[in-house]
Length: 169
Length: 167
Image (cartoon, rainbow over all chains, first blue to last red; front, side, top):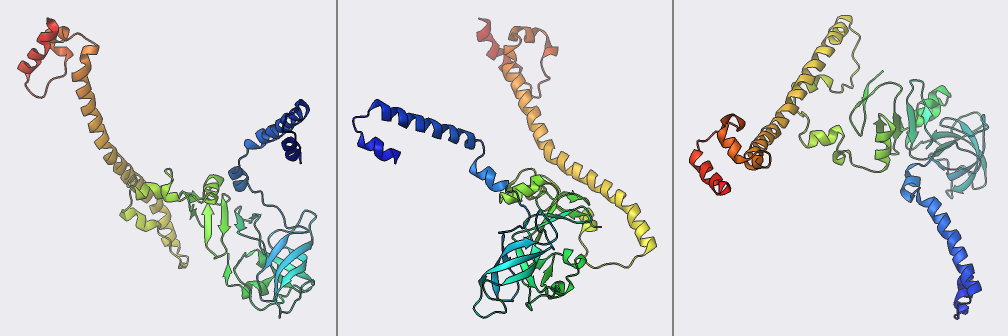
């Protein structure tokens, strides 16, 4: 909009010129403050946080759902970590599956991008956020689990998921 | 408890240190510290990063083949606990690491000795060529102790070189 005004006034009145330069001044200041942190720095310093309301997770079992959006992380105000249970709404589902789009389901987080500390002092982190759908009792709805799962699930008593897993990290 | 090796720099990871990254194809990458982790995230190849063991071994800076490496190889079969065996192993570990360290040091000194000889040769040549910047050649002729003992007898050559300067 400002550009159109400037182009219209080809004579280049001092008022509009001043406006243009002031706008430019503001823009350059903003650019100066962000140039210290380049795009590459932001890319590498990605801070991974908890799984909270609104987080989209991948579903890694054959229950029929593909993506689930977290609507509540049980047992924590901050959010869910690796091994916790969440309540989610199915956002994307396969046409013929046990769950449909729009269902409210429980899920166990089996992969989290945020690192979780283990009892020996080490930390583990995965590549993405993934969940396995379970029922209220904690038993998985699907019959297969894809990808690696952590052995934190053993402590949380999700033994069935560990049994179905193809690789335990 | 198991002492792992950092995927990036190949240093040992002691318990309580570092981060383990599990990729979706179930490959586990262990890092000793955030430096290695960040370099991995930058997709750097450890074989091209100068301070890693992978680079040093690849470019022949460090020892690659030795019998002492056989002791440290990963054995995936769990062994039944044998008290005598364990004691022997615990006694052997410092001895083996000492031998390994001396051999690695010898490898490095051998590699660097070539440069040492070349530097000495270069210094000798520089002394012979540029000593006139420090002392006048006439002074060197009078006092034989100020010059390096020449390896070749080229007395006549030196005299003809100095005469134009004297004039």
